[in-house]
Each structure stands twice: as C-alpha cells, then as structure tokens.
Image (cartoon, rainbow, N blue to C red):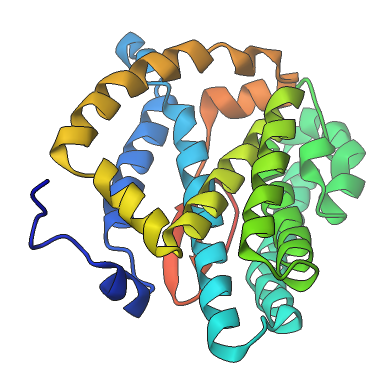
Length: 277
C-alpha cells in the first residue's frame, strides 16, 4: 500500500492538540443547521440538517477525551476539580443570564405572555441543569437548552468514572463501548445524544493507540474512503426514522435547531445551542 508522504504521522498527531480538520466539520455542520431553519425550502428537508447536532456532540466527546488523556499522561492524573471549575464558569454564568433575560422577556412582553406558565413549569429543571427533562408540547426558544443538560452530565460523570476509577485503557474503551451499546438499544432521543458523544470518546481513545491510529488513518485514504462514503448515506437513511419517537419538545428541537459557540481547552468548537464548552 502506498502512503501519502503528507499524511499526519502518529508522532505528529501526539505532538499537537489542534485539529484543523474540525474547521471543515464545523462549517458543514453550521450550514446544515441553517437549512433546518428554513422549512420553506422543500429540498432542505432531505438534508436532515438537525443531524449536525450529532456531529457537534461527537467533536465535543473527542476533544474532551483527547485532552484528558494527554493531561493524564503528562501529569500522571487528571485535575478533575479544576476541570469541573473551568466547565462551571464556562457554562453557568451565560446559562443563568439566558434564563434571567428570557424570564424578564416573558414577564414584560405581551406577545410572549402565553409562554410564561410553560416556562415557569420547567424552571426547576432549567435551574437544576436538567433542561432535557422539561418536556413541553409548546415550542419556545428555551427548548434548545436541552444541550446544556446533556453536556453537563457528560462532564460530571464521564471523567470521574473513566479516569478516576478505571486505570486500564482497554477497560475504559470496553466500558465506553458497552455503554454506547446499551444506550443504542434504549433508543430514546436523549440516549442517542449520549451515543453521539461517546462515539467521539471512542474515536479519541482509539487514536491514542498506535495500531488504532494506523487503522483509522487507513480509512482516510482514497481506496477506503470512497466505498465508506458511498455506504454512509444508506446507513443514515436507515436511521432517519428513529427520532420520530422523541417527545414533542425534542421533535421541535429537531425541526428548528440552534447553535452556539463552545470552548474546550484553548480551542473553540461549535455545539448547538447554548453550550459554552
């Protein structure tokens, strides 16, 4: 097999945490989300623009895991307390401000008065960082805050379980794979959201192994990438119907979507909708 001399070697991959390829993924994901905001164009419905959310989730899972693995190898352990503090100050201040501004708008603006009771009913979930459980039959802007709950729980539980209680890389990967399988079988909208994050986690874990890196790198070469690219639309089509089982609030999320900017480490990654990490 002929190798491209410009292909990133495993040593070069280990030497940096910057992934320029993600810029392209973010750009494509952003455009897909835009199409989900324009239902008046029939063609856009075929693009399944809301699926860009899963791409953003996978990027998030990959970046967090890769950075934690590198930190553990460099320092001997992860600074879990510092990790949580950084995430807290990147999420909570902006999130709390959004809740306050939205509450004031609902209270003062007559056109939004009908949403006030629905918002107040879900407020305990919003304040507890569990907005994904604040189901509502009425679409509101704050429906998009479900992403905060998903990502927050990933930050709290994933590093603690995988990095503090498990020391073997093989067992870490095995637990992640098993959890992904169980969530896939569960089949709910929320479960699939976590599956997307864990897919990124497993990718980061595999790429930290020389053989794993070589295997993934081989899939990026033309001889492997072309048939893989041809097969992926068929797989996507077979999965396109599962979100119909989602509750009304998540169906609204899927139909309309939203994005915001998130920062992980010192690099930014786009994740919908209100998430700052």
